[in-house]
Length: 315
Image (cartoon, rainbow, N blue to C red; front, side, top):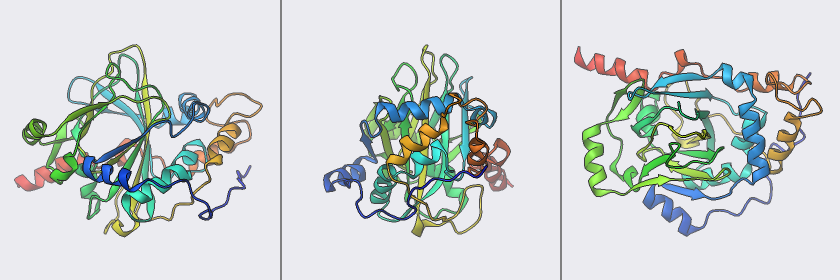
């Protein structure tokens, strides 16, 4: 069955209240901006329930060795799709802010669900997102990531840590740390002597927008509580990569009104009452999943390319 939604595909006349000049200045200075309660409890519950009952999300999950004896589990996809995840990634309140921070038209670079489960969730090494994406033909770091807290994020369950203002240090050399791209540890040590380390504790529905050169990491989750998060990444239209890679080049983003989050979320859970195998009883789950272009581990080359580049440099 064809899945259709009656939402407008063009930019609506009335946009959400834009970020203030003071907020934009804060982002430029700090490298991040925290938007508390950007999604209300009912909206984020739709995302949480969708993710944790989604068999396809789980089927496409893969692990990344964190170099500390743990493994980070995540699912990653290139196109937002027409389902619940796409409703969050395409809704005005996210896309409008991303565009303001980029000072350009944003397009969806990719999204991922980080599944930091209780007691076993692995760590992320200190890194910059541009440390991964530089090799994808992206010429400037004018990209922004939007970290949506699905579960509460605390120090105990491995919340995000950032180094305030570290995006001003420019792109730092990265090397493989386990199966992750880690920033040069000597340089990170020196940066920590001059810049402030922050633990970004978040409630479900909070969103952290951060620059692609901001240094960030997270600890392993040794607590009894999961810490899942969805991260939507956007590139600027003018920053279209000069070559093909495993992430998309400029693709116009079909924005959705904020109301789509609830409406598409409610459609996910129809009379059947469960996400089950990723469908809602009408076949919509299959079509929504197919439109997302899942990125499986053998195609996620951003970190593994570092190893190849290092070997080339040695030869």
